[in-house]
Length: 317
Image (cartoon, rainbow, N blue to C red; front, side):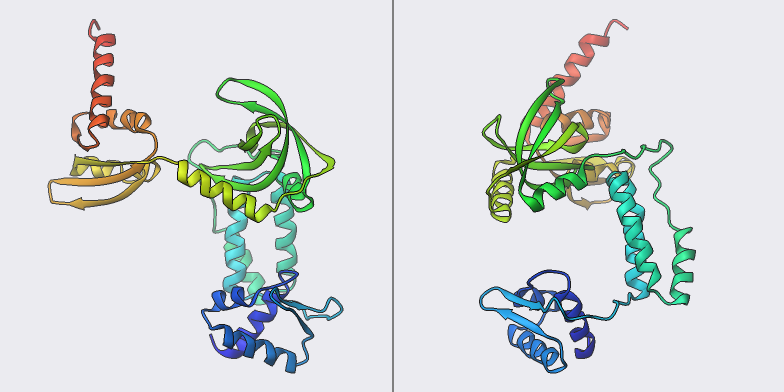
């Protein structure tokens, strides 16, 4: 990227946040802090009123009027692709907000770029197989985001899957996580006296209270993630399977913590990292005699016990 393009990109970045740190700019463009300082000075000399807060970062004066941001064809295409995924990973409220934003983006594009995007619109689809999962009316994503920004206590009617019971919770939200194809609210639960993970599609009702809580969100969220990572026990698993079986599970293996594989011609050695040996053992059963368990030994014992129980259950038939 040449310097003129970088200066324009820095100006755009300064519009995205109240205060932008010099290190954030340096990391984004792969430049030194000294280069960042020179670029900021060049923008100031060009008439852009950039303020600086010592030890915090840079900001643009609120009264400064900037021209509309023009999107490149590649940037608009990337946003369109994201829009195709939104209905499958959120709810109707978020989808509607995103589509409204997309209309605004299209309104400032050049005519030829609009035509390109219109053609691309009908040529990109997300296919979930023969059974489409209906989009949820609401999983409270917007309400939770609002509570996070305003540090408001949430009142939840939560359905716990493990005991099939509903409970009322007052929680202090610290973050949102998307994993295992679902959104999760991470919050301090006053009932349990600790941080908990609430899957959004199991929240039956949510209310934003007027009560404000006091937590440093970034710090609390990072501490929670670090703690979870430390407690997350995983097992290294090594399998040896026939080549045809390796081809058969080509897609499924990624769901079970696939790491790498070595093909020696007739057989394939695969390594996995997985936290649930019991669930992994059940998956191996489907491979019957086409696979050998090299490690760990207790996984082999687990599969053997499952086979024994199956034999006892079905030997008469």
